[in-house]
Image (cartoon, rainbow, N blue to C red; front, side):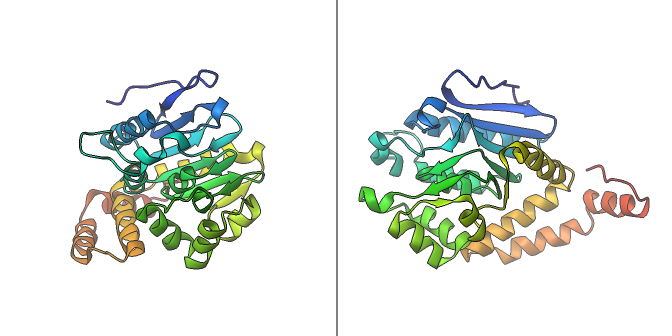
Length: 263
């Protein structure tokens, strides 16, 4: 059973986990530094992802930040250690954290409560949905820093935003606002700040009410399609299994009875 942790907004700390019913929330919690991620936070995030995925009662994960920004990305002073994880074990790389988030079995929502910069733009892209406020902004400064970004982050940009938008964001390092983030598909939806929680809650409730195994399998297939690496045989097995599983029986029964399914 996952421990219940209550975030403390005014006490800077590593990422915090809170759970309410079928919903888990991970909050980046260094607001004085715009929720900048430190090297020790990377292992913490991997551990929290593992705990959330292992709890069968959870149906959706929300990732957000404390204060006026989602995240300023990774601490530039430690950027070399974030890109590689040498033998001798400095912990997971930043790339490994984003990859683990992308592959998390349950659906994920990034609640973008402000600016999203550097590596945190990839963390948000690794989520299935991104809901941001209309004053949000983003930029990827790799070209200004002389950094060739890690390959899987570039792949996520290309697969989700297209090659032209990925080139624009990586090669110019220009800052764009929320309306443009929505136009290019970075944001799933854009809302006023006072409507953010209601929109996140609406989507989280919708996701939490759907069949978890069916969603898990389809999310995996969609991610594999996006990477150009679909395991067709495994996807077909999941499809066939679903035709005789408990979820489809409940789904069909609830449809016939005109009630909400109970998965």
